[in-house]
Image 1: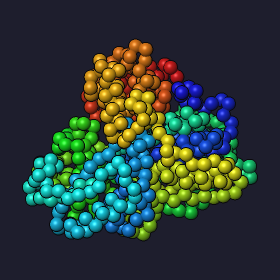
Image 2: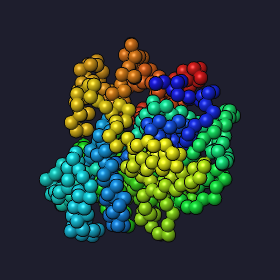
Image 3: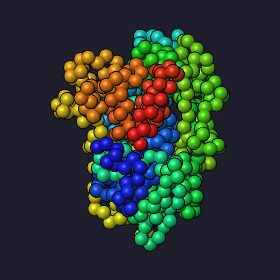
Length: 516
């Protein structure tokens, strides 16, 4: 359903809802999807773009968190491990299995400790798709060719990859298709509580405003959660957030195989080096206390130097700051505690409910791998307090584009299902270059039929980007400008020259502003 039917701006008929959700990151979008699927009338407001901040700045992994075992976070790891294959099955176009290589450095953790940790990692939750771990001789393995020769043994284990920003958008699309109103560019400036519910004032960037009545309010504002409670909901916050910045660098690809690396650092932290966008390697992340404005997180030169230095401890070819072609940083809202080491702070979440005739549910913390479970628990809580007898449903559901059965028949396993879909797409559109077909298959899955017009993909705006795709992103995925398209709905900005990025921006401004 196009956005014009879902309220790009505020629907004039929208005066009330069951639940208003503040925050268009992964938790807010996931909760909106779950509640809408249970039949509730839902409004989601986001002051910027979907996934504009933390939820597009992750390391882009669906993982249990191997290093959290050292901090005895067994409950969190088990919960996250249990979600990996649920998520992989729900959207095989934007998520897929990934094998990780850990070179063994005897000066770090002993081999027996790593073997024990990987044994737990393999067995804390059921696995059907992801293979287990094993040891390797690096000199005999393709992943060893890029490493310094002193690393002779290592370990291989499984986790998953996700396009984090698209994951948020797919949840929002599903929420909208089930009746939710998704509003981007609308800020919740005031929320007043009464015996009958919440009176919420929303404002957009052009000065427009509207008041919405809601029976319940969900605060999924991420790093702004505590600030929202005090400044806008007029509620004294009972919890504190520890804001930790995670920064990443992107360099031209350092290896040609499809495995990722996990490196142990002398400070007891780890970093990942991951195949990225075909032509690049993604390296991250840091854990640095963030004390500035939440929406203005930027990587520091010291963080770039740190990531280059740690990667260079392992790779045969040193990584230097001059190699960096792109960076990004996000602020993770972690539950506050007294630990001095930011990397040791829990990544688990807490749902804090203020009950009564006007419930207020605040989401504290969380990680992208557990978003579906968090949303399910949040929806259970809200429904219970609103007296709505609606059952959980997302564990077996596809995300938009994830059901490939119309193209390939019944699903078998997500990774091979996607390959069959890609082949079927190639048979239907043999005129498309393989690289373009693969990118579109990954981005849209079975929603590709909504992208292709009667005249195909239409004219090229710049090489590899056609008018039909841009129109689709505007009409169906809340894209409002070139940054939405090039850095969140995709990472095409990495592959384009500055001139071509400017051409896309000019096209979007001309076409979309005139259509507004």
